[in-house]
Image 1 (cartoon, rainbow, N blue to C red):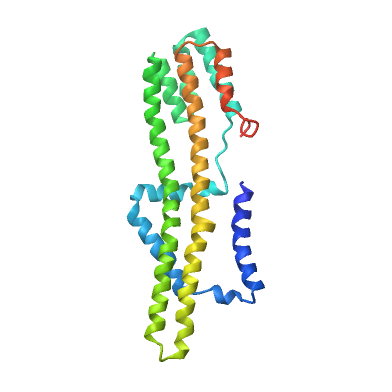
Image 2: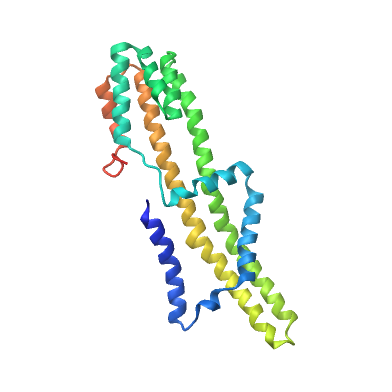
Length: 252
């Protein structure tokens, strides 16, 4: 579990609420349901219009990665690729058919099947590049959903502020209604900027980091599979792929 994500969200909102309290304000002064409806409803509506249904559902699916990120065991993955290279060296590429049947990673499985079929190294790279581009597009689009929400929220907050000011201007003769209108005006702006900078944009950047880590793991597999197709020595393959590994990601 990524505890820093939880701490970050709690710390961000606590700082705002704490600052408001130190200034003499109360929690109730920051609670305004019309403003919340305008900002969240408007932001969600604009985002749904912006992206296709498939990307929206995928962005919801990967949201859990914020607190429970994928584990990339690059050290174990390196050992697996080297083991494949030893099998290919001893038994030929057809010897990898059993490894392909047992492989659970669809990307690695496709690469192994291409090896078993005796594909040309450059052809294998091109096939896997297509898959990598698809994965990158899907993962980055999911991150861009929250990036878009971070862009829309402050603007929708300004719309909420204008709505509140319109309400104020229409009721200048009714002092009792002025407070509610002014509150909606200012609180809507706080909601828009706050949600954008404390939630939506950080979530987007966190998902982008997860996407880059996923692509790095897939690229490592691709390079290993192409090296096997080239007939490289297992020791050379190990040295080449070890460049993908840092002390922080060797064991996930």
